[in-house]
Image (cartoon, one colour):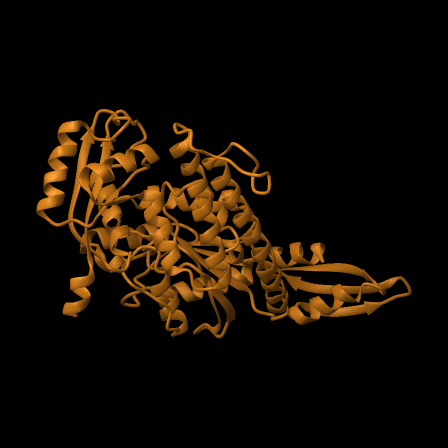
Length: 424
């Protein structure tokens, strides 16, 4: 234990509270989340955290000269090895502050990339992280070097005479990105085959989504008994974890746990992790887990719903909202939340940690999956055996009538299954 602590990098977390930004978050909540991000990075010991009010950013150093000097003295006195800025730094700002403070800096995007890199477990996740990191690096590379005129000569074999260093570096990154994209396409194709195999299992897919640290993995573990990482840290889950389980009601489902969402996630990271969240697109039911005890729970919920919309999740996909962590609330607030949940459709108040409300929640999941079903009649050509086979594999066929033109099936299916059938 002592050795681990000795190796830990002492970190200082700073949240720039820019008063001219009308869309800025509450500084206290933003700083707390930034500290949680820092704690999620292995080998980091957070020894200080401050919110610093700024009328507007200083172009070269973010903070004013007096504040830069004051923070520099603190960094030296406290032996800080890493400063985490909860915001976006320009390459010039990062370089100037690192020179001034003689320590390593990471901005919010850089920190999230580091966490993603540490958490990614599957081959697809690793490739996605590498691509996101290179995309981020490429944009910073351009801004960092355009003021310089470093050039190198050549014989025309590599880049040609007079190619600037930035052009060469950019080209090297683009080549690496192309290589990673080719590898990712192969991996995604393999996963498509796996998904096609899963589609044959007559169990509905239930996807857990939610703001990071909302308790999804704790609920997943309670329902499955699986040894999935469930720590009180942000981004504890990156790659979807799936289990075929039988609920206490006897209903069999495939349960999927996904990466937590977070506010101000850079666009290139959302795009890079689209495939990680692809299970949500195929889900028969989405369970939106909320930390109902968090002061910003409404903002977090809006963030999750916004990303789901960006991903293309259809409104037709049934959803249940889960108000988790009711055990953290005081008695009065808990009673109010539980009463509110009872009055509203498709909301369940639970504690994944203690198990309170979970039994009722499982009943609601079963009812939701069954309620969505409707009886329909479909006609299939004799030559289209694939659709008929799929319907039987799904266990949705009630009866079959044959004619000269084809097969008439009476099925009892969900709207999601109906949509899948039409795409076959």
